[in-house]
Length: 494
Image (cartoon, rainbow, N blue to C red; front, side):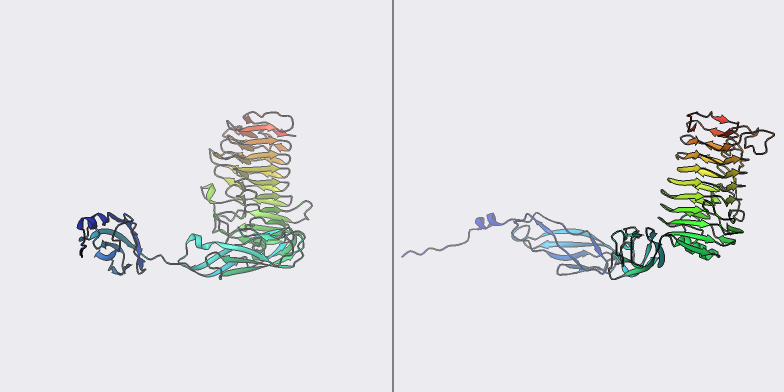
């Protein structure tokens, strides 16, 4: 009988052992008082021993500790932790690696407490629109936490809807008399705010006799006609994008303001504010007066606004700042006595002058009556007179077309431009490089010592008294194709 004994082969065991060569993938950031689970990847993946024991090597200022594989730090700073694998390097020696972890202040979670919709009530005509805004309140809010989702309920037609920007459009055939707009927080859908809309038939007429009523009717938006009573309406001028002051038709609104049946309605700014009296926003329409308006008058008067040596600081009587914005004025309307351009058009806006008077405005530099930056001015009637760009470098006493790199255009189909003065050139009209003037009708007075209606420009009153076109600008007769010379001192009329 034979007996065999089997014993271990050390060389065989050595050949089957796979040593750890590295530990990676450990987090580099943790937050104060927020337990952080520590994990890592072991290389190679078939290492014989892979169980990691975590310890704090150097806590620094963090007061960090580790329980199992969970790191907790109570203060900011840098902690060094050690990952150890027993018998990882060899069968009898451990493998260890150190890692630095930055402990940062805990990120506070946003807490939404409420959502407010403005305006909270509005009258919106069928076929009209109304812009709403939402204010999200809470703590630890970042910009992205202010996002809301808009919905409208109560409508009966598919054309009644609200866009992602808060603009409500009411279908022309809407049969509902009341709608509810709701703004819901995108962070916390349990928080929301609402507004109630009364649907009206077509354009609504609002009678006003106080500045508070006027401002409320305008800022409510929608499609409406405002009937002014005779009297004085004193507002604080608008600076920048403030909605607290001035008279600012909302985006997509269509506001018509009519003169009183008799007498005069004067709208002016308080003496302590600089800025615009009217400011027309994107896709908004403002109309002052209408064809055949009664015997009353609307006067937009800048005489109480502060006068400074900086024309841009004093603002305008009416400014059209945005693409799609449009301002139209008719007879029985006057814009006067401002210490800067009476009307300013920019960013793709449009000004149509069908009647009325723009007079006695003074600008230190350019376009005392009307200044067109990147926009369009169409003059079909009315008078631009007695406006002065009074500095020795002033241009375009009546109308200045373009400024710097802007592209503006002026189309004159009627009306008259008379008795305006520019300290340098273009008493009636000055067209800047890259901008255009097309003359189809009306009258622009040149200079004549015997003509009291003359426009004047420069020290001799003849530096383009009627029209001055800077190099690179264009001025033409839109009917016969005639190109006007650079400096025109003679009266232009058709």
